[in-house]
Length: 214
Image 1 (cartoon, one colour):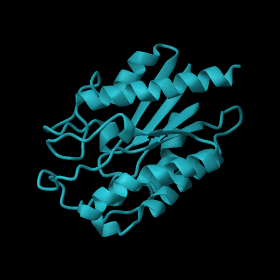
Image 2 (cartoon, rainbow, N blue to C red; image 1 turned 120 degrees about the horizontal axis):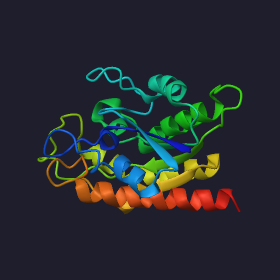
Image 3 (cartoon, one colour; image 1 turned 135 degrees about the vertical axis):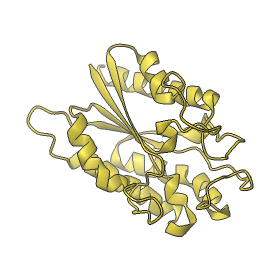
């Protein structure tokens, strides 16, 4: 069985823009599991507000850097980590550029690649996912930490993430090419975007497996 760890924020958790949480069958992680089938085990690790490296004074315990070693230890063996963080790094109070957010993602990739998994445990491959854009209609955004600069940074992330993935030898996907934030809150995906993202990730995994066993 191929174990896939999905490490992300509220759009991996499945926050519903209408309130609550999307069902397992609606979340991209659940659709990915259904699409890939029984030879794969998809592990959800989504948390609202999670950043790459930042400690948020308004939402504590959200740093991906701090949580990652515990998560890796809990879920090993892991064959693939799907890393989808960066939206919350765009919050105004972090004052982090898109380039610095990509550096945060790079640090997480380094932790994944160098973690001591133990004898007989694989070092996971990484699919680095640049997150969907933040919607420009801030009057609909219910989250005070995002402003106009947040929107622009989210648009810039893909360029830096793709360069990071190429440099590190990771797989890459720009989620904004297939999915969008809902009109309802300008931040979280609706059911249609969850499905589109799941299908795009499934395609990446299929190609990765085909190339691996050539």
